[in-house]
Image (cartoon, rainbow, N blue to C red):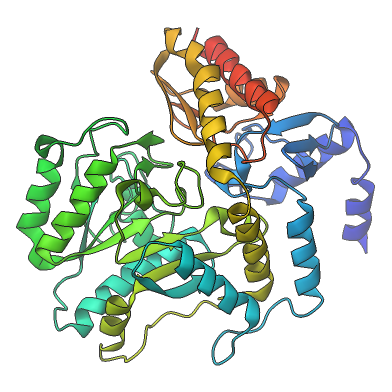
Length: 445
């Protein structure tokens, strides 16, 4: 009763209540990629509500959201169609275990994912989050080779500057220097890393570009279970696009050496790069694909790992006779129902033209940053806009500044970037880009 009274008392609006909420938070909560303790004073902004593309802070300020809540809320917040789907499903059942049971929302979601992803992906394993979908993909690849009588094929090959999640298997294929691999050397498996693709998205990919990757693959094919890669856009590790031709060559090399290809489409899937999936730019199909983030429109956590019948057959031919993974909340009906509604919204909209419009507006709005002395590069790809600075930005300075300028942008390292919801208007894109340019000018000047 005492705790309830505190919560109700601090629920009143205004700056004093916001400040109290921050202090309560700092006493008990640990935020992502943040320190705790008396010296941990990174900026923290309480949100009271969210609607459309706007976040309303507890002190009354409104911010244009440029992050889609880590790239998930592609339809914005409080969308009536998604709200209705959640309400309707919770009146039926919010959850039921998926072992030995099934339900309409999960089956329909799997059918839709099979229909819209590259053929011949035919089997859908629904899981809890993007990182878990990568773990599932890695386990599928390893168990496949066990089932095919090649248990020595346990290593993975990837490229530098990649990011695949924060769980142990996913961390092991993140960039070993700029990622977090080095912090957990004793825990993680040791895999192979080729140089990051050097050919930009709009450049041709030559033999020279792919040669280091091809050499590593050829030398280690006998021990490789799979190649894992983010198609055409490296996300949290770099925010950098690369040529679809590089991806096409990776697919051909995997085929030539009999190595599985895992496409991590968690950040790139569902239209973000201008095609429905990053693989579509190259016209290729992976053996295993991971999707997440935008799958539920940012409402609930859910991801999926898809694979071919060949992979599924190999997995089930192993000694276990079944795939050995089973999340408690697998195929959660509430998340699946919202995912179905979100995919319906996306596929029923002119999403391609929308993303093209946002790309054009991001490119124009961010262009002035290229002339700033502290900026190394400005780049866009689909509904992604990036200002890369020459030195890491000071989050304690730039984050409050961006909020004062009326936008929610969450930089990291040398990357000040935006991935706005697809419903973002031309005027709101302009607000985002002008704030980014001004903030970068002020913190790097």
